Length: 152
Image 1 (cartoon, rainbow, N blue to C red):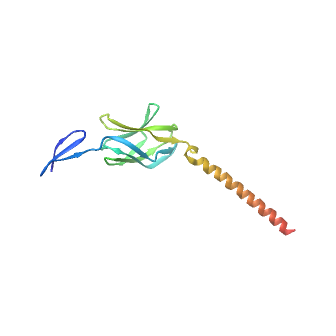
Image 2 (cartoon, helix red, strand yellow):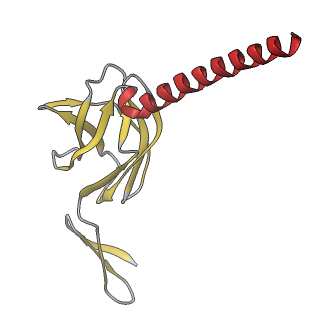
Image 3 (cartoon, rainbow, N blue to C red):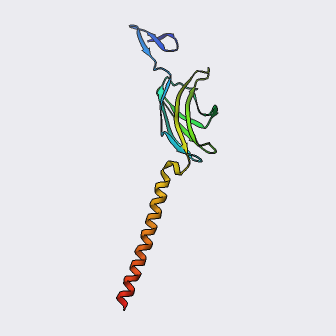
C-alpha cells in the first residue's frame, strides 16, 4: 500500500484496492483540568480535539495577550499532553489555542480558568479548619471543667 495523494483533510492510499482515510477536523474541544491555581505548575494537562500533528504548539490568550506557558510532552491526532506553567499569570478565563506552524489555529473560547487559591475551593477548607479549631477549643474547655468538678 503506497501513499498516492495528500491534501489538508484526506489521505488517499493505493494498493490492492483504493481506500480513503479522512482526518479529523482541526479543532480544540476540551482541556482537562479546566482550571488551575495561579502560581502553580500542572503536570498532566490534556487538550482534546482533532487534527493535531507534530509541530503544533499551544498558547493561552486573555484580553488579546497570548501566553506560551505549555510544554508539550506527548501528542496524537486527537490529544496533546503537556505541562502547564501558571506562574505570574493574571487570574481569569483563557482561550486555549492550538497553532500549526503555517499559522492555522483552533480555539476553545474561555476553556481554562486561572484562579487564586480561594477561587479554587480553598475558602471552604479554611472555614472547615476554623470550625474544627473552635470545636477543639470547646472540647478542651469542657474537659477541664469536668475534671475540676470531679476533683471537688
